[in-house]
Length: 273
Image (cartoon, rainbow, N blue to C red; front, side):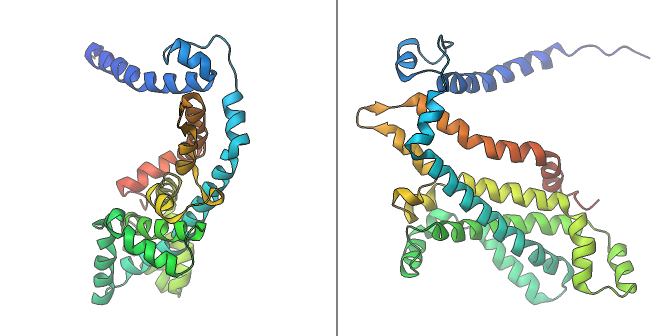
């Protein structure tokens, strides 16, 4: 058996990639542990002489905790709407053979081709007339609506991987469509469900356009809008802003770490196998 030769070129390329990815992370994390004066004096690449967590404490004392809570509320509500509506919709798309269902599905997927920027003006008018302007509900509804087409496409692909023999076996046993959905389809679609949860959570957590246009007061600000508070007429508080960025990254990073395997399987369309 021949001995495998080490691939030095691949190793060198990996080191370059690690450096390109690690340097921005290093700059961001180190800046959060410096005072604003030290950062301005020593520059972004210097290691802090006096470590401090004052930037994180100051962020929460200045109202960032409220922005964090608002973002969490929006994210949980968006994920809840998607998880409640998309699985039965995808099940109907996969199991129904009617032409009407296929037509509705194609129309539903038009949402993939329509950018949110194209409908933001009528969306602002609708939310204003409905009394939802400057309300978190007015951010939740359009965010969930624009996340649903992609989620339905992903989950329906996962459900199609479930073999027809399993459906037939449960039907022969006298199972109703409702029982098939809850006892067969949902357990075998866990990876797809994890995928749409992570995707919709990312859409809601990182949302910028809808909060920008549909909210105004400080009580309805989310994280992406709260980052503007660190920019004043006298300059930008870079350490404070980067500390807020780190705090905003942690929840989504934790979600991804726990669901990354199911997320990859769901995107590859092998969740039902």
